[in-house]
Image (cartoon, rainbow, N blue to C red; front, top):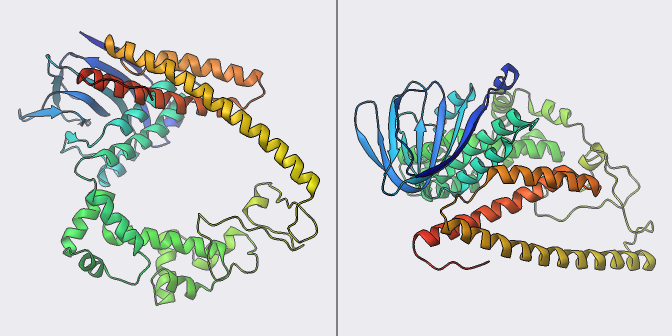
Length: 424
């Protein structure tokens, strides 16, 4: 016995030019029928969340598949696979194609020579597949673009979930990123981490799909762009800050990779830097800077039509008592509404926990794309009637649905393994 849900699409020529398009999506569970032998003309990522089975390659070699795992079905490569008839498996699949697949193969995100890939955790990729399934609702005007964008996200999620890359690969990349702007050679970086240059190259290639030199260069140039855009530092000073003692070499390298010289890049930003920012660039965690002078600020907020407000025109930073009273009144109301929202969400999740136990008891799939699509349509209508942005309402519901599915998956796993289930 098995359950299956799937949808297939036919993107037009304009969508194909985006570089990556989704051709279909499906969610299946149970003792599914054998697939193949067959050969496809497009890619398919089959994410197996639970269960076991087998995969047979064109040369007849049979590989045992144990969840969590990924099956790569690539164009022109014969394949043949099936879940174990006694245990079955739970899978989600996405069909896709496009010119961008060549770049993903070059970066190591898609591996035609490695059709069975163990995963450390299937929850991340499965969440993306479920989101594609929700986008596949009938009449979605953004279907092709929304699902195509999600395929990019799926490839990233699959890369992160690979069991052979975590956690060592991430640790190497984090260490390189930390020291990227230090004037060190690749050999110096390798020695710092107790590795040979060849070992470092292999680790970075597996984790990032590029050489250590390209990985470091990307970080350095990104930092250089930030300094050029947000400060008045001379190009030579920018070069030194990102690890280059020779400003001429840095300028040639920047121009070759970015396409414009550093001074041209700065001019294109078209911004006037407030005084006091010449020596450093604020970190993302820094508090916002409020300019108290009468000099107009032409920073990013003004360029997108925002107006900076102050609580007083005295320049002292004091807040008018009447303004403070009104702020306190409004914030009290917001706090009360937040409390009500939290309590309502708690009640909602109590109900969804009961739904999850009922599904697990009767072996129903945790996700129900058809109902999710109806709920999204319903919430968008309610939002419009309430003068609330429907897109925001949809994002909010998608977040809740993802959390509910995660709870249902855990309940199903606990039920399958004979563990007691607990509400959140």
